[in-house]
Amino acid sequence: MKAKEILKDLRGKTTQELNVELVNAKKELFNLRFQNATNQLDNTARIKDVRKNIARIQTILTQQEPKDEIKKSKCSREKRKLANAKCTDKSCKCKK
Image 1: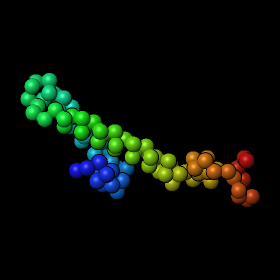
Image 2: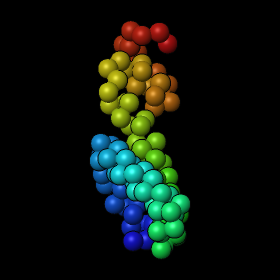
Image 3: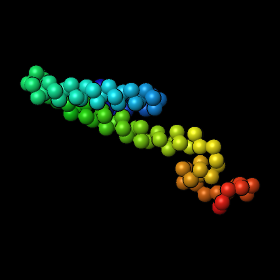
Image 4: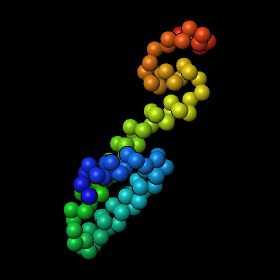
């Protein structure tokens, strides 16, 4: 698959699914490195592809973190802080 197709597929997944993908990719990278060390690996370019996929997954996870934190937060003050927004609610009881 091409990079754009991979990204489109990854962005459609939930955080839990991405974490599972990340673990699987890291296991695959470990196995590929082990095969490479024992001269059993035929396609060494696969190591590079897996490393890039791990980076893609981690990037998407990082991009999704603020959204998840905002949803989990109960206090409107914390939500604004996470979203880098200023307080416009006059009825807000938190410190401004």
